[in-house]
Length: 119
Image (cartoon, rainbow, N blue to C red; front, side, top):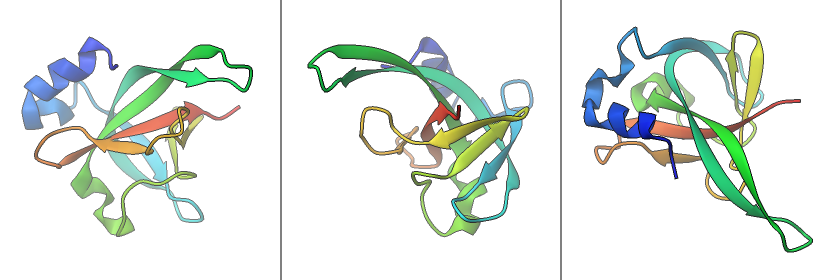
């Protein structure tokens, strides 16, 4: 379940990447070289089942990125890539074990990349 910010961004369509809402971040593909992209940060909660059978709710950082910014990769975002924001690294990973990204729009023109801060 995402926070309302993503719903507002989706309602604005392609306007979501305007300078007011987006940040300049570095995208670092696993084993590759960093390059600059624009991203809209958001938060999402994920329920994770522990080995002890308890459900833990985690707060995760998601980044919405227009897909054409990642065409140079020749692939979708994948586990182990990183997004760096103001010196803080976020590893591309879905803490609940799901896919690391989802399409943010029905037009498949923006990724919603799931990450977790690197300790």
